[in-house]
Length: 142
Image 1 (cartoon, rainbow, N blue to C red):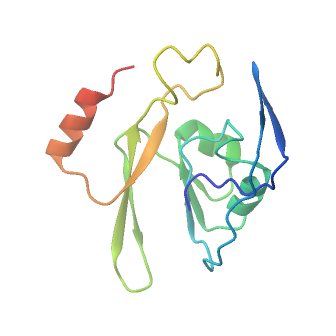
Image 2 (cartoon, rainbow, N blue to C red; image 1 turned 90 degrees about the vertical axis):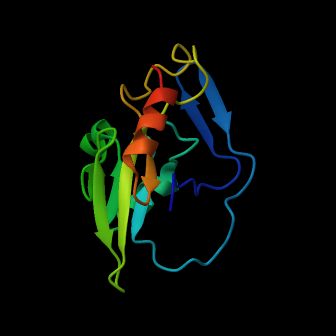
C-alpha cells in the first residue's frame, strides 16, 4: 500500500497555515493482508492519516525517508535518495524498492508547508538502470 489514508469523511487535519477536511470515505476494498507500505513522507495527514498510522504498526515493513523512519520507529526502513532495498516475496520473486528524489508540490510552496522533509523521497518499485537514474537526476532540481 502507498501513502495510506484510511480515515472516514469529515476528519479534519490542522497543518501549519492550513486546515484540511477529508470529504470522502476511503474506498472499501478487501485486499487481504498488507505486507509493506511505501510512505513518501509522514508529515502530512492528507497522505498519512490517523488510521494509516495505526496500519503501519501492523505491517512488517514501511519504507519511507530517513527522517520519517526515525520518527515512526518500529518496522520503518528509511532510504536515502537512490538507496535501494530488496524484498523477496513468498514465491521467490525479488522486488527492488528504490528511493528517488521528489518535491512535495510546485516550486515555491515550501513556505506553506514548513515541515516537509529536507530530502523527500518517492519509492520506485523495480530495478532502476544507470540511464534512468541519470535522467531522473537531471529532472530533479531543488
